[in-house]
Length: 361
Image (cartoon, rainbow, N blue to C red):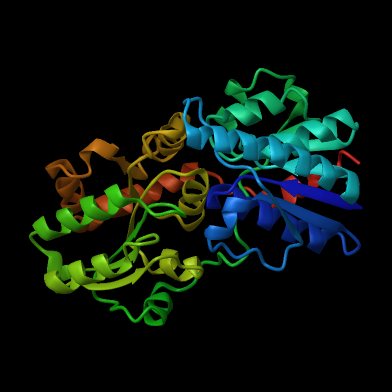
């Protein structure tokens, strides 16, 4: 069997795609897979775990009229042609798409050639590309039950699978994780991250909040800063005399999650799924753009009491400081936030998604 997997450039799309390929290879020893990514994903630094990969020339296109967007439109047209060549040469039996406009050409050509297609939506609120492709796909897998309300298609095409997580994400003992990171078992551990590209607003907002904490000496931080901010953030923690491990990007996330008491993050679909898996309370600040995906994702945790919601424009306000202090100084509140995860099920997303794909053949 030949299975082509196509997705966008962000970690939130690539991680589940790679996890799906790994699970598929474990299920079928004679499967031939091909992962198709936008060329700009080369800058992400995301481990692809020996996947067979092809890249297309697509760039992000907006509706603005500008020279840069005209170039992007030209690259997108080139990417359409490259997608057609990939389909014709690889001759897949099944095509699986994980979202974004950049994956649409492969899925569209698959529909033209009557190749079976499955799309997977990671977010609660489906993106425009998946909303469109849902009408052409043979099967639509979703990560959250609420997503079904946003897809105006035959319910028989839908499958609730959850969001495939990285195979490396195994829960380990907290003390062991802290030791691996060179951190103390006697301090409150905060994990700060802004998604696979980092977030300057979270970085600066958190540093300001920490500088105003009354008991900053009782905390330690694991901070995923993103590209370009590493040294600046390291120096900030040194000036405040706060113990911190700062990374631009960190591939051993099982260590970071297992070590943490509280997470400060965006609300990407993969992040929310990982927080549910590790049962980690969080202060979540949804990315304010991208079609309001992250706000809907954040509500999944907020409605169960597992997370405090801080809007992006509030990250540099005292409300963020108060939210931090109210959790760091109150273990009972932290425990209550953890208890909310009992109402959020962890699906075996890899297996369910593989089953959904193989059922098409």
